[in-house]
Image 1: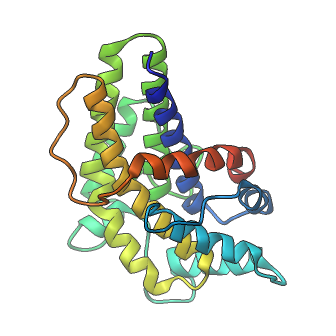
Image 2 (image 1 turned 180 degrees about the horizontal axis):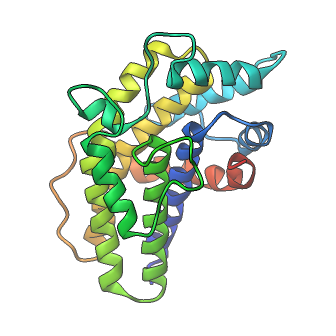
Length: 254
């Protein structure tokens, strides 16, 4: 078993769960404390596309504030739920892929169907639907965990199938709408924390298209054509950020 592949899969899983937590619900004290202790890489933005976003998150965390949790809750409600506003960046795939910009459209139906084939539903998150950005990111983390389990078990067929499914879901779903969501969200976000969260998420997804191609190639599978976005030292970037993301998981999931 290639230890580099195992490391890459663990790193990807940690990053997907971290980015999912950014948007699943308002940030809690436990989550904020976990992120503060994580120490994400914020230097060398020329070589690390994630550095700028993590620097914004770090800036918010380090700034003296009377009530940072309230500031974040207000920003979350305003930017992503439309509280007190007529417009917002609603984090649902259907909103960005349907002509009417409504929830529960074709993308929701397709994602729900995919989730059900894996025995997944939103029972634990009744306030959000299947094509919410947090659910789609969490799904990618679960697929990555499945791939890792197959790799450790020596099940090459299951491993290859999981990588292909991840590539398909990333290309046909997350990368199909998250860049538009991120662009629009920047118009409504007020805090550096969520500016950073959006930036990290958008750039990580683009990077992951490269990482999946590398994993497929290592498994002897001809990958798709090289993605057009996020050219750069993607493996190095993820290897710097993911250990801190993994370390922050217990608190950040709260």
